[in-house]
Length: 526
Image 1 (cartoon, rainbow, N blue to C red):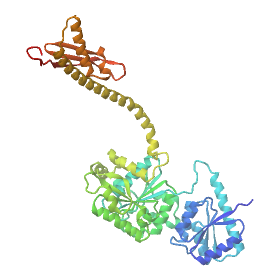
Image 2: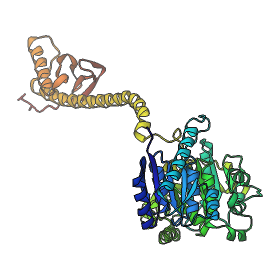
Image 3: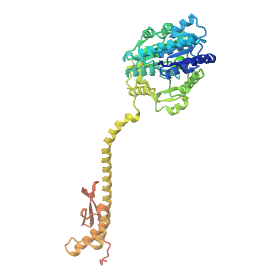
Image 4: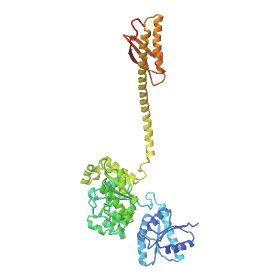
């Protein structure tokens, strides 16, 4: 049974779209899964629908030129067949389409047989390529996915954009990610200085060779730094930046993204045609800003400019607070209100002295400050740039094991503290009852007397004194066996054995209290 051919149409002209849609409805085993009128929507549709066989792109589709769109689709999905719809299928048009990676060209008003034949051939090729990729070795799988593109911009000069880009690239390389660091601060790029690099090739060389741009050409222009990331550096002469167009930057970044897991772009603090393209293509855009009013205003001014130029929406830009210190007047909560865009939870601490040696020597590994390194790692995690194996687990799952261990270790300690506190309470209560019993014993001795003799009257008096003393005590402290009374030298002394925290136990010591016997009777003994 023949499988249905899945087709995506990218046509901005409504009349052409309607006519071709009608023709496709007459064809059997062909299904239009998406009809888009903007180039960006075509890219999204192809990524959202699995196993698309053929994409038809109209010559006048925008805003991205049709040939550039075809080139990007082919780079993203090498197994995908793309056909150009042209108003006039001339030899020049056909050559340009083939050079961009298209599998064919049809006119905007094809015959039904021509449309069916061209789409069927393209679908057969696409399925053959897909089977080839699926059966390829696991050592070199073809996913058709581009690497993550992160563009870093400065709200103004001196916010630490280049420093962040370098250390972020090194941290991700250390974590096992394939990283390319691109310097698109075309007139004042400082990455070679910060990394002590002497380079012959730059992004200007690739911009001049965009017609024949491929992986081999890009690889020749890159510099492999000993710390891990590959570098595509800015031109050595600022005036060369004028020769680098937005179209060239699009092609360069697209090719680089097909070769690396993560591409980090340092676009500086100026908005130019080239770095604006890097902002538009980026998966994530981060503006570095220091905690001061000019920087906060600069970040808001930049995001509003991008929004007016329809490059990037304000809510799609992150702001990262650098040189943060608890003594700063502007803290993250206030900066969040001033920036106008979402603020990253992570902040980069103000550690200029820790970075000074690395900046002066061109050796980023000279930075030993733990707080700075932790902040870089947190930024990478918050931006989801770490691989699945390095991505930190959710807080609940990550802390579950340690929480169990800590709980098991702290329970005996808490229990011991509670027992000690309870024992202190028991000692206090024993001291109180001992005082009450001594006072009562002193009054009883004064009233009824206390004789150490063995006569029945003396024993009765002693028993009455004990009874009155015990009456002032309650609970386990009223045990007659553990309450002792001594009368000597005009004092009544009561000793009560202190109970232990465990029921039925007694401590090996007792609490004693003396009370003076005051003779309140007159001289006649009354």
